[in-house]
Length: 147
Image 1 (tube, rainbow, N blue to C red):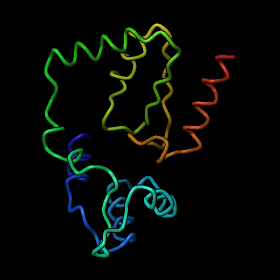
Image 2 (image 1 turned 135 degrees about the vertical axis):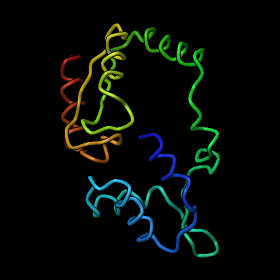
Image 3 (image 1 turned 120 degrees about the vertical axis):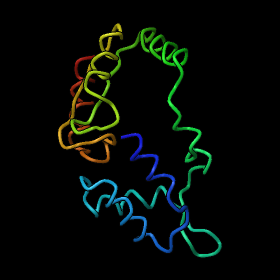
């Protein structure tokens, strides 16, 4: 899954139109309707002075250096951060995610003193984009438990 994301974000930065970006996203993530992609992509790209369109976020976030596997010390620190969470925390995982394995999500919740896991069907890694209604139901149910 992370390889797919890396390939996606490392493609050409400049395209001729919003429709070109919509088509790129549609090919990358077939779970999302084209209308939804078109509605959200406009908030993620900007037009350049040369008339082309590009991502709004920094190019440095789309480089090879960010996709290197983490070292063991970093992994241990990250698990430690999860274990130190004191507030109620919801981990939302897409049922078809190829980035966060079900076992990893379950281990995250097991290590959190107040963790909960919600798995949203019909969604990959980008749950709120792939299944906004399912995401909203999961978050609303979690918040209802808190009151």
